[in-house]
Length: 230
Picture 1 (cartoon, rainbow, N blue to C red):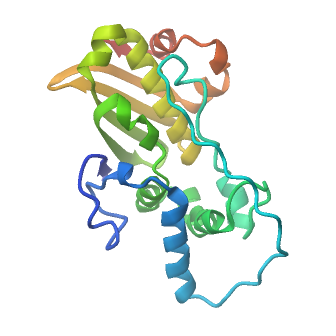
Picture 2 (picture 1 turned 30 degrees about the vertical axis):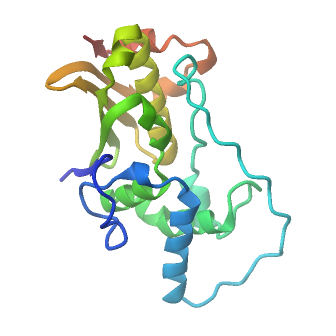
């Protein structure tokens, strides 16, 4: 059965369960804060792990600046869940130990295609949080281990300015971020204005890997992937 996450719903029940339906992902401004909480809770029930040698703290990663003119070009870094499974400590020098601890704890279930684990990862990391300013609402679904679904409510002012550019940029970026955070093979994206569907497209990971995003026209790419924009 598909799991569903409503990105505009209240987040007050998040502390009780991360496996439920109807959770607000945009309420998390700092994914490391949630990962730290998850790490601390798991640490209370497990013996202390051997600490690695102390290393200089890396500089913080600059916050992504979303802009419709180049929204699809950049995306979240892909999480290597296999690496997270076998290694207790980050090797890239960028990921914080506490955030990596969350990856390590979730890796086995994620690689097994556990849908409840998918929901917990999406809720904790909030990969589409920086797209909130471009939509009136957004829902994520996890219907299968190989597929994620994203449905968003279009902003009328953006549709009036450049509907094709808006739908193309937003859908490609959403798909790239979701493919980066979970090891699925495809992401289905739907855009609506009320009851009227404006966008319907499925992006496959193999299609994304073959294209250089800096030279991509996102609206044309939607059509190339068999999508429709109304």
